[in-house]
Image (cartoon, rainbow over all chains, first blue to last red; front, side, top):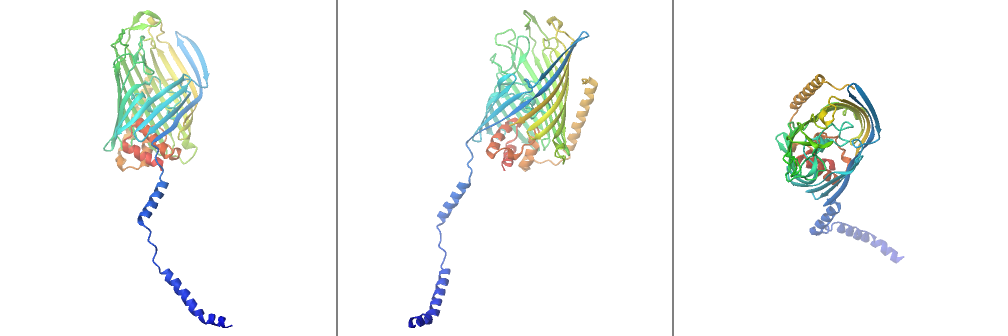
Length: 408
Length: 92
Protein backbone atom coordinates (compact mmCIF):
# COMPACT_ATOMS: atom_id res chain seq x y z
CA UNK A 1 0.00 0.00 0.00
CA UNK A 2 3.03 2.26 0.15
CA UNK A 3 2.81 3.51 -3.43
CA UNK A 4 -0.90 4.27 -2.95
CA UNK A 5 -0.16 6.29 0.17
CA UNK A 6 2.50 8.20 -1.70
CA UNK A 7 0.05 8.98 -4.49
CA UNK A 8 -2.57 10.20 -2.02
CA UNK A 9 0.04 12.37 -0.30
CA UNK A 10 0.99 13.92 -3.70
CA UNK A 11 -2.63 14.41 -4.89
CA UNK A 12 -2.96 18.06 -3.76
CA UNK A 13 0.24 18.88 -5.57
CA UNK A 14 -0.96 17.17 -8.76
CA UNK A 15 -4.29 19.06 -8.60
CA UNK A 16 -2.48 22.33 -8.04
CA UNK A 17 -0.25 21.64 -11.06
CA UNK A 18 -3.23 20.84 -13.30
CA UNK A 19 -5.04 23.97 -12.11
CA UNK A 20 -2.04 26.19 -12.71
CA UNK A 21 -1.44 24.72 -16.19
CA UNK A 22 -5.07 25.38 -17.18
CA UNK A 23 -4.94 28.97 -15.94
CA UNK A 24 -1.62 29.56 -17.65
CA UNK A 25 -2.95 28.20 -20.96
CA UNK A 26 -6.04 30.42 -20.73
CA UNK A 27 -3.86 33.46 -20.26
CA UNK A 28 -1.77 32.75 -23.39
CA UNK A 29 -2.16 35.58 -26.01
CA UNK A 30 -4.39 34.90 -29.11
CA UNK A 31 -2.47 33.97 -32.19
CA UNK A 32 -2.32 37.03 -34.59
CA UNK A 33 -3.52 36.18 -38.14
CA UNK A 34 -1.81 37.94 -40.99
CA UNK A 35 -4.10 40.89 -42.01
CA UNK A 36 -3.34 40.37 -45.70
CA UNK A 37 -4.71 36.85 -45.35
CA UNK A 38 -7.92 38.23 -43.82
CA UNK A 39 -8.22 40.76 -46.63
CA UNK A 40 -7.83 37.96 -49.13
CA UNK A 41 -10.54 35.89 -47.42
CA UNK A 42 -12.89 38.90 -47.39
CA UNK A 43 -12.23 39.56 -51.06
CA UNK A 44 -12.99 35.94 -51.93
CA UNK A 45 -16.22 36.07 -49.93
CA UNK A 46 -17.28 39.24 -51.79
CA UNK A 47 -16.37 37.66 -55.12
CA UNK A 48 -18.47 34.58 -54.33
CA UNK A 49 -21.48 36.74 -53.38
CA UNK A 50 -21.22 39.04 -56.44
CA UNK A 51 -23.60 38.38 -59.34
CA UNK A 52 -21.74 39.44 -62.41
CA UNK A 53 -23.83 41.59 -64.76
CA UNK A 54 -24.01 40.03 -68.17
CA UNK A 55 -22.17 41.88 -70.91
CA UNK A 56 -24.68 40.59 -73.40
CA UNK A 57 -28.29 39.93 -72.51
CA UNK A 58 -30.94 38.50 -74.81
CA UNK A 59 -34.60 38.29 -73.89
CA UNK A 60 -37.88 37.76 -75.65
CA UNK A 61 -40.97 39.82 -74.85
CA UNK A 62 -43.86 40.50 -77.20
CA UNK A 63 -47.61 40.48 -77.46
CA UNK A 64 -50.54 38.44 -78.61
CA UNK A 65 -54.02 39.57 -79.54
CA UNK A 66 -56.89 37.40 -80.70
CA UNK A 67 -60.63 37.52 -80.59
CA UNK A 68 -63.94 37.54 -82.36
CA UNK A 69 -65.33 40.28 -84.58
CA UNK A 70 -68.88 40.56 -85.86
CA UNK A 71 -69.80 43.24 -88.40
CA UNK A 72 -72.92 44.46 -90.13
CA UNK A 73 -72.52 46.99 -92.93
CA UNK A 74 -75.39 48.83 -94.59
CA UNK A 75 -74.76 50.84 -97.75
CA UNK A 76 -77.48 53.29 -98.77
CA UNK A 77 -77.50 55.16 -102.06
CA UNK A 78 -80.39 56.82 -103.81
CA UNK A 79 -82.86 55.34 -101.34
CA UNK A 80 -81.86 51.71 -101.75
CA UNK A 81 -79.78 49.75 -99.26
CA UNK A 82 -77.63 46.66 -99.30
CA UNK A 83 -76.61 44.80 -96.16
CA UNK A 84 -73.62 42.54 -95.59
CA UNK A 85 -72.56 40.65 -92.48
CA UNK A 86 -69.29 39.05 -91.42
CA UNK A 87 -68.17 37.03 -88.41
CA UNK A 88 -64.45 36.49 -87.91
CA UNK A 89 -62.31 34.84 -85.28
CA UNK A 90 -59.41 36.96 -86.40
CA UNK A 91 -58.55 39.43 -89.09
CA UNK A 92 -55.75 41.78 -89.95
CA UNK A 93 -56.75 44.31 -87.31
CA UNK A 94 -57.73 42.00 -84.51
CA UNK A 95 -55.27 39.12 -84.51
CA UNK A 96 -51.56 39.53 -83.97
CA UNK A 97 -48.68 37.54 -82.55
CA UNK A 98 -45.52 39.59 -82.29
CA UNK A 99 -42.58 38.21 -80.31
CA UNK A 100 -40.02 40.95 -79.65
CA UNK A 101 -36.32 40.23 -79.32
CA UNK A 102 -34.38 42.61 -77.10
CA UNK A 103 -30.64 42.04 -77.28
CA UNK A 104 -28.61 44.31 -75.03
CA UNK A 105 -24.84 44.62 -75.30
CA UNK A 106 -23.44 46.24 -72.17
CA UNK A 107 -25.36 49.31 -71.09
CA UNK A 108 -25.06 51.30 -74.30
CA UNK A 109 -26.35 49.17 -77.17
CA UNK A 110 -29.72 47.53 -77.65
CA UNK A 111 -30.91 45.62 -80.69
CA UNK A 112 -34.70 45.41 -81.10
CA UNK A 113 -36.47 43.15 -83.56
CA UNK A 114 -40.20 42.52 -83.69
CA UNK A 115 -41.52 40.16 -86.35
CA UNK A 116 -45.28 39.99 -86.50
CA UNK A 117 -47.76 37.41 -87.70
CA UNK A 118 -51.29 38.54 -88.43
CA UNK A 119 -54.01 37.77 -90.93
CA UNK A 120 -51.94 39.84 -93.37
CA UNK A 121 -49.13 37.29 -93.11
CA UNK A 122 -45.66 37.55 -91.65
CA UNK A 123 -44.08 40.99 -91.42
CA UNK A 124 -41.68 43.07 -89.39
CA UNK A 125 -42.86 45.83 -87.07
CA UNK A 126 -39.36 47.13 -86.42
CA UNK A 127 -35.71 46.13 -86.52
CA UNK A 128 -33.33 48.68 -85.08
CA UNK A 129 -30.22 49.33 -83.04
CA UNK A 130 -30.28 51.81 -80.18
CA UNK A 131 -27.20 53.56 -78.79
CA UNK A 132 -27.40 55.38 -75.47
CA UNK A 133 -24.98 58.13 -76.52
CA UNK A 134 -25.26 60.46 -73.52
CA UNK A 135 -27.78 61.54 -70.89
CA UNK A 136 -30.66 62.97 -72.92
CA UNK A 137 -29.42 61.64 -76.26
CA UNK A 138 -30.35 58.29 -77.77
CA UNK A 139 -29.34 57.46 -81.33
CA UNK A 140 -31.20 54.82 -83.31
CA UNK A 141 -30.90 53.34 -86.76
CA UNK A 142 -32.72 50.72 -88.78
CA UNK A 143 -36.35 50.03 -89.59
CA UNK A 144 -38.26 52.31 -87.21
CA UNK A 145 -41.71 53.52 -86.31
CA UNK A 146 -41.38 57.22 -87.12
CA UNK A 147 -42.14 59.80 -84.41
CA UNK A 148 -45.34 61.20 -85.86
CA UNK A 149 -47.89 61.56 -83.07
CA UNK A 150 -47.89 59.01 -80.27
CA UNK A 151 -50.46 56.42 -81.27
CA UNK A 152 -48.35 54.26 -83.59
CA UNK A 153 -45.20 54.29 -81.51
CA UNK A 154 -46.66 53.98 -78.01
CA UNK A 155 -50.35 53.15 -77.90
CA UNK A 156 -51.27 50.78 -80.73
CA UNK A 157 -50.37 47.50 -79.00
CA UNK A 158 -53.47 45.47 -78.15
CA UNK A 159 -52.67 45.28 -74.43
CA UNK A 160 -52.17 49.07 -74.27
CA UNK A 161 -55.04 50.22 -76.47
CA UNK A 162 -58.27 50.68 -74.51
CA UNK A 163 -60.51 49.53 -77.36
CA UNK A 164 -60.42 46.57 -79.72
CA UNK A 165 -59.92 48.58 -82.89
CA UNK A 166 -57.49 51.28 -83.95
CA UNK A 167 -58.81 54.77 -84.61
CA UNK A 168 -59.42 55.24 -88.33
CA UNK A 169 -56.77 56.85 -90.49
CA UNK A 170 -53.99 57.39 -87.94
CA UNK A 171 -50.81 57.53 -90.05
CA UNK A 172 -48.64 54.50 -89.27
CA UNK A 173 -45.27 55.43 -90.72
CA UNK A 174 -42.47 52.86 -90.49
CA UNK A 175 -39.36 53.27 -92.56
CA UNK A 176 -35.60 52.84 -92.75
CA UNK A 177 -34.35 55.79 -90.76
CA UNK A 178 -31.81 57.42 -88.47
CA UNK A 179 -33.26 58.86 -85.28
CA UNK A 180 -32.11 61.08 -82.41
CA UNK A 181 -34.30 61.32 -79.34
CA UNK A 182 -34.27 62.00 -75.63
CA UNK A 183 -35.97 63.28 -72.53
CA UNK A 184 -34.82 66.42 -70.72
CA UNK A 185 -35.74 67.80 -67.31
CA UNK A 186 -36.38 71.54 -67.13
CA UNK A 187 -37.17 72.50 -63.56
CA UNK A 188 -40.24 70.53 -62.57
CA UNK A 189 -41.30 70.14 -66.21
CA UNK A 190 -40.00 67.75 -68.82
CA UNK A 191 -39.44 68.04 -72.53
CA UNK A 192 -38.81 65.33 -75.05
CA UNK A 193 -37.63 65.42 -78.63
CA UNK A 194 -37.62 62.78 -81.34
CA UNK A 195 -36.25 63.52 -84.81
CA UNK A 196 -35.80 61.13 -87.71
CA UNK A 197 -34.52 61.19 -91.26
CA UNK A 198 -36.00 58.42 -93.41
CA UNK A 199 -36.18 57.30 -97.01
CA UNK A 200 -39.63 58.79 -97.10
CA UNK A 201 -43.20 58.27 -98.11
CA UNK A 202 -44.18 57.29 -101.62
CA UNK A 203 -46.94 58.97 -103.59
CA UNK A 204 -48.74 56.51 -105.83
CA UNK A 205 -49.90 57.45 -109.31
CA UNK A 206 -53.54 57.53 -108.15
CA UNK A 207 -52.75 60.05 -105.36
CA UNK A 208 -52.63 57.71 -102.37
CA UNK A 209 -49.59 57.91 -100.10
CA UNK A 210 -47.79 54.84 -98.85
CA UNK A 211 -46.17 55.13 -95.42
CA UNK A 212 -45.02 51.57 -94.66
CA UNK A 213 -42.85 49.05 -96.51
CA UNK A 214 -41.57 51.62 -98.95
CA UNK A 215 -38.91 51.18 -101.58
CA UNK A 216 -36.92 54.41 -101.76
CA UNK A 217 -38.32 56.14 -104.84
CA UNK A 218 -36.20 59.28 -104.98
CA UNK A 219 -32.99 60.87 -103.69
CA UNK A 220 -34.76 63.06 -101.17
CA UNK A 221 -35.23 62.14 -97.57
CA UNK A 222 -38.18 62.75 -95.30
CA UNK A 223 -37.85 64.59 -91.99
CA UNK A 224 -40.10 63.59 -89.11
CA UNK A 225 -39.98 65.20 -85.71
CA UNK A 226 -41.96 65.45 -82.53
CA UNK A 227 -41.59 67.70 -79.50
CA UNK A 228 -43.29 66.59 -76.30
CA UNK A 229 -44.01 68.74 -73.26
CA UNK A 230 -44.92 67.45 -69.81
CA UNK A 231 -45.78 70.63 -67.88
CA UNK A 232 -46.51 69.00 -64.51
CA UNK A 233 -43.97 67.49 -62.15
CA UNK A 234 -45.98 64.26 -61.87
CA UNK A 235 -45.90 63.74 -65.66
CA UNK A 236 -49.69 63.37 -65.74
CA UNK A 237 -50.14 65.53 -68.82
CA UNK A 238 -48.22 65.33 -72.07
CA UNK A 239 -48.79 67.52 -75.09
CA UNK A 240 -47.02 66.87 -78.35
CA UNK A 241 -46.59 68.41 -81.78
CA UNK A 242 -45.20 66.55 -84.80
CA UNK A 243 -44.30 67.31 -88.37
CA UNK A 244 -43.37 65.16 -91.34
CA UNK A 245 -42.18 66.63 -94.59
CA UNK A 246 -40.48 65.44 -97.74
CA UNK A 247 -40.70 64.82 -101.47
CA UNK A 248 -42.89 61.84 -102.19
CA UNK A 249 -43.00 61.50 -105.97
CA UNK A 250 -41.07 58.90 -107.98
CA UNK A 251 -37.80 60.31 -109.34
CA UNK A 252 -38.22 61.22 -113.01
CA UNK A 253 -41.96 60.63 -112.93
CA UNK A 254 -44.86 63.01 -113.68
CA UNK A 255 -45.30 63.81 -110.00
CA UNK A 256 -41.60 63.85 -109.07
CA UNK A 257 -41.75 67.26 -107.43
CA UNK A 258 -44.75 66.64 -105.22
CA UNK A 259 -44.13 67.33 -101.54
CA UNK A 260 -46.02 65.92 -98.61
CA UNK A 261 -46.44 68.03 -95.48
CA UNK A 262 -48.05 66.55 -92.39
CA UNK A 263 -48.56 67.77 -88.87
CA UNK A 264 -50.04 66.20 -85.76
CA UNK A 265 -51.03 67.31 -82.29
CA UNK A 266 -51.36 64.80 -79.47
CA UNK A 267 -52.62 64.82 -75.91
CA UNK A 268 -52.19 62.35 -73.07
CA UNK A 269 -53.68 62.89 -69.61
CA UNK A 270 -53.60 60.29 -66.83
CA UNK A 271 -55.06 61.46 -63.55
CA UNK A 272 -55.62 59.49 -60.37
CA UNK A 273 -58.88 60.64 -58.83
CA UNK A 274 -59.26 58.11 -56.03
CA UNK A 275 -60.78 55.58 -56.42
CA UNK A 276 -60.64 56.16 -60.18
CA UNK A 277 -57.95 56.55 -62.75
CA UNK A 278 -58.96 58.78 -65.64
CA UNK A 279 -57.21 58.38 -68.94
CA UNK A 280 -57.72 60.81 -71.84
CA UNK A 281 -55.78 60.42 -75.05
CA UNK A 282 -56.17 62.11 -78.39
CA UNK A 283 -54.43 62.87 -81.64
CA UNK A 284 -55.27 65.08 -84.59
CA UNK A 285 -53.34 65.15 -87.85
CA UNK A 286 -53.54 66.58 -91.33
CA UNK A 287 -51.68 65.53 -94.46
CA UNK A 288 -51.36 67.85 -97.45
CA UNK A 289 -49.83 66.78 -100.74
CA UNK A 290 -48.83 69.32 -103.39
CA UNK A 291 -51.07 69.76 -106.38
CA UNK A 292 -50.44 67.04 -108.95
CA UNK A 293 -52.06 65.28 -111.87
CA UNK A 294 -52.92 61.68 -111.04
CA UNK A 295 -53.74 58.71 -113.20
CA UNK A 296 -57.14 57.06 -113.00
CA UNK A 297 -56.31 53.36 -112.48
CA UNK A 298 -59.63 52.44 -114.12
CA UNK A 299 -58.71 54.47 -117.18
CA UNK A 300 -54.89 54.80 -117.39
CA UNK A 301 -55.04 57.31 -120.25
CA UNK A 302 -57.00 59.76 -118.13
CA UNK A 303 -55.56 62.11 -115.53
CA UNK A 304 -57.44 63.84 -112.77
CA UNK A 305 -56.66 66.06 -109.82
CA UNK A 306 -58.11 66.98 -106.46
CA UNK A 307 -57.15 68.73 -103.25
CA UNK A 308 -55.03 65.96 -101.71
CA UNK A 309 -55.76 66.87 -98.12
CA UNK A 310 -56.52 64.31 -95.41
CA UNK A 311 -57.65 65.01 -91.83
CA UNK A 312 -57.95 62.50 -89.04
CA UNK A 313 -58.42 62.71 -85.31
CA UNK A 314 -59.65 60.87 -82.27
CA UNK A 315 -60.28 61.51 -78.61
CA UNK A 316 -60.48 58.62 -76.17
CA UNK A 317 -61.45 58.53 -72.50
CA UNK A 318 -61.17 55.59 -70.11
CA UNK A 319 -62.18 55.34 -66.48
CA UNK A 320 -61.10 52.57 -64.11
CA UNK A 321 -61.82 52.23 -60.37
CA UNK A 322 -58.23 51.16 -59.94
CA UNK A 323 -58.02 52.17 -56.28
CA UNK A 324 -61.24 50.47 -55.19
CA UNK A 325 -60.79 48.09 -52.25
CA UNK A 326 -62.89 45.53 -54.10
CA UNK A 327 -60.55 43.10 -55.86
CA UNK A 328 -62.96 42.47 -58.74
CA UNK A 329 -64.37 45.95 -59.28
CA UNK A 330 -60.88 47.49 -59.48
CA UNK A 331 -60.09 45.42 -62.59
CA UNK A 332 -62.96 46.76 -64.69
CA UNK A 333 -62.52 49.71 -67.03
CA UNK A 334 -64.90 51.54 -69.34
CA UNK A 335 -63.68 53.35 -72.43
CA UNK A 336 -65.13 55.47 -75.23
CA UNK A 337 -63.59 56.98 -78.34
CA UNK A 338 -64.83 59.42 -80.96
CA UNK A 339 -63.03 59.61 -84.28
CA UNK A 340 -63.20 61.52 -87.51
CA UNK A 341 -61.47 60.60 -90.74
CA UNK A 342 -61.84 62.79 -93.81
CA UNK A 343 -60.04 61.75 -96.95
CA UNK A 344 -59.73 64.01 -100.04
CA UNK A 345 -63.04 64.79 -101.69
CA UNK A 346 -63.18 63.88 -105.39
CA UNK A 347 -60.39 61.36 -104.98
CA UNK A 348 -60.94 57.66 -105.61
CA UNK A 349 -61.09 56.97 -101.88
CA UNK A 350 -62.95 60.07 -100.77
CA UNK A 351 -65.01 59.63 -97.64
CA UNK A 352 -66.01 61.48 -94.52
CA UNK A 353 -66.22 59.06 -91.59
CA UNK A 354 -67.39 59.62 -88.04
CA UNK A 355 -66.92 56.81 -85.57
CA UNK A 356 -67.95 56.11 -82.01
CA UNK A 357 -66.55 53.20 -80.03
CA UNK A 358 -67.38 52.07 -76.51
CA UNK A 359 -65.83 49.25 -74.54
CA UNK A 360 -65.63 47.35 -71.30
CA UNK A 361 -62.26 45.94 -70.25
CA UNK A 362 -61.42 43.46 -67.52
CA UNK A 363 -57.75 43.49 -66.47
CA UNK A 364 -56.70 39.96 -65.52
CA UNK A 365 -53.33 41.37 -64.48
CA UNK A 366 -51.31 44.44 -65.35
CA UNK A 367 -50.54 43.18 -68.87
CA UNK A 368 -53.45 40.91 -69.71
CA UNK A 369 -56.91 42.13 -70.65
CA UNK A 370 -60.20 40.68 -71.87
CA UNK A 371 -62.46 43.21 -73.54
CA UNK A 372 -65.74 43.82 -75.27
CA UNK A 373 -65.99 46.72 -77.70
CA UNK A 374 -68.73 48.06 -79.92
CA UNK A 375 -67.99 50.42 -82.77
CA UNK A 376 -70.25 52.36 -85.13
CA UNK A 377 -68.85 54.13 -88.18
CA UNK A 378 -70.86 56.31 -90.50
CA UNK A 379 -69.16 57.18 -93.75
CA UNK A 380 -70.31 59.53 -96.49
CA UNK A 381 -68.86 58.90 -99.91
CA UNK A 382 -67.14 61.87 -101.58
CA UNK A 383 -65.70 60.09 -104.62
CA UNK A 384 -66.19 62.11 -107.79
CA UNK A 385 -68.96 60.87 -110.08
CA UNK A 386 -66.50 61.39 -112.97
CA UNK A 387 -64.38 58.63 -111.47
CA UNK A 388 -67.34 56.28 -111.14
CA UNK A 389 -68.07 57.21 -107.52
CA UNK A 390 -71.38 57.54 -105.76
CA UNK A 391 -71.10 60.87 -103.96
CA UNK A 392 -73.49 61.02 -101.04
CA UNK A 393 -73.60 57.26 -100.59
CA UNK A 394 -73.81 56.46 -96.88
CA UNK A 395 -72.10 53.45 -95.33
CA UNK A 396 -72.99 52.44 -91.78
CA UNK A 397 -70.73 49.88 -90.21
CA UNK A 398 -71.52 48.35 -86.81
CA UNK A 399 -69.00 46.01 -85.23
CA UNK A 400 -68.84 44.06 -81.98
CA UNK A 401 -65.57 42.66 -80.68
CA UNK A 402 -64.54 40.18 -78.03
CA UNK A 403 -60.80 40.37 -77.58
CA UNK A 404 -58.03 38.94 -75.43
CA UNK A 405 -54.65 40.68 -75.32
CA UNK A 406 -51.49 39.81 -73.45
CA UNK A 407 -48.02 41.23 -73.28
CA UNK A 408 -45.50 38.42 -72.89
CA UNK B 1 -75.96 53.38 -82.59
CA UNK B 2 -76.61 56.87 -83.85
CA UNK B 3 -73.50 58.71 -84.87
CA UNK B 4 -72.89 61.99 -83.14
CA UNK B 5 -73.81 65.16 -84.94
CA UNK B 6 -71.78 68.34 -84.81
CA UNK B 7 -73.72 69.82 -81.87
CA UNK B 8 -73.14 66.76 -79.72
CA UNK B 9 -69.52 66.71 -80.77
CA UNK B 10 -69.14 70.33 -79.71
CA UNK B 11 -70.70 69.53 -76.34
CA UNK B 12 -68.35 66.57 -75.84
CA UNK B 13 -65.36 68.70 -76.82
CA UNK B 14 -66.35 71.36 -74.32
CA UNK B 15 -66.77 68.72 -71.61
CA UNK B 16 -63.35 67.28 -72.39
CA UNK B 17 -61.84 70.76 -72.22
CA UNK B 18 -63.58 71.39 -68.89
CA UNK B 19 -62.27 68.12 -67.47
CA UNK B 20 -58.83 68.97 -68.80
CA UNK B 21 -58.94 72.41 -67.20
CA UNK B 22 -60.03 70.84 -63.91
CA UNK B 23 -57.05 68.50 -64.08
CA UNK B 24 -54.74 71.44 -64.67
CA UNK B 25 -56.11 73.19 -61.59
CA UNK B 26 -55.84 70.03 -59.49
CA UNK B 27 -52.29 69.52 -60.61
CA UNK B 28 -51.33 73.06 -59.81
CA UNK B 29 -52.28 72.35 -56.18
CA UNK B 30 -49.86 69.44 -55.84
CA UNK B 31 -46.34 69.94 -54.59
CA UNK B 32 -43.81 69.87 -57.40
CA UNK B 33 -40.67 67.87 -57.05
CA UNK B 34 -37.68 67.56 -59.30
CA UNK B 35 -36.91 64.09 -60.67
CA UNK B 36 -33.71 63.90 -58.65
CA UNK B 37 -35.76 64.26 -55.45
CA UNK B 38 -38.20 61.47 -56.33
CA UNK B 39 -37.89 57.82 -55.46
CA UNK B 40 -37.75 55.08 -58.09
CA UNK B 41 -41.16 53.86 -56.92
CA UNK B 42 -42.71 57.28 -57.46
CA UNK B 43 -41.18 57.65 -60.92
CA UNK B 44 -42.31 54.10 -61.81
CA UNK B 45 -45.84 54.99 -60.77
CA UNK B 46 -45.92 58.32 -62.62
CA UNK B 47 -44.27 57.36 -65.87
CA UNK B 48 -45.34 53.80 -66.71
CA UNK B 49 -49.04 54.61 -66.36
CA UNK B 50 -48.76 57.34 -68.99
CA UNK B 51 -49.21 54.54 -71.56
CA UNK B 52 -49.98 51.28 -69.74
CA UNK B 53 -50.55 49.74 -66.32
CA UNK B 54 -47.61 49.84 -63.95
CA UNK B 55 -45.64 46.58 -64.20
CA UNK B 56 -45.08 44.34 -61.22
CA UNK B 57 -41.41 44.32 -60.15
CA UNK B 58 -41.57 40.53 -59.81
CA UNK B 59 -42.31 40.07 -63.53
CA UNK B 60 -38.68 40.15 -64.65
CA UNK B 61 -35.18 39.61 -63.29
CA UNK B 62 -32.77 42.53 -62.65
CA UNK B 63 -30.93 41.75 -65.91
CA UNK B 64 -34.21 41.77 -67.81
CA UNK B 65 -35.29 45.05 -66.20
CA UNK B 66 -32.01 46.59 -67.32
CA UNK B 67 -32.79 45.57 -70.91
CA UNK B 68 -36.44 46.64 -70.71
CA UNK B 69 -35.33 49.95 -69.19
CA UNK B 70 -33.34 50.75 -72.33
CA UNK B 71 -36.27 49.76 -74.53
CA UNK B 72 -38.74 51.87 -72.56
CA UNK B 73 -36.45 54.88 -72.33
CA UNK B 74 -36.59 55.07 -76.10
CA UNK B 75 -40.37 54.54 -76.24
CA UNK B 76 -41.44 56.91 -73.47
CA UNK B 77 -38.45 59.27 -73.78
CA UNK B 78 -37.59 59.04 -70.12
CA UNK B 79 -34.69 61.06 -68.79
CA UNK B 80 -31.54 59.17 -67.83
CA UNK B 81 -32.22 59.71 -64.13
CA UNK B 82 -35.79 58.45 -64.46
CA UNK B 83 -34.69 55.30 -66.27
CA UNK B 84 -31.93 54.53 -63.78
CA UNK B 85 -34.15 55.07 -60.73
CA UNK B 86 -37.06 53.07 -62.15
CA UNK B 87 -34.80 50.16 -63.14
CA UNK B 88 -33.16 50.22 -59.71
CA UNK B 89 -36.57 50.11 -58.03
CA UNK B 90 -37.88 47.29 -60.24
CA UNK B 91 -34.69 45.25 -59.70
CA UNK B 92 -34.95 45.18 -55.93
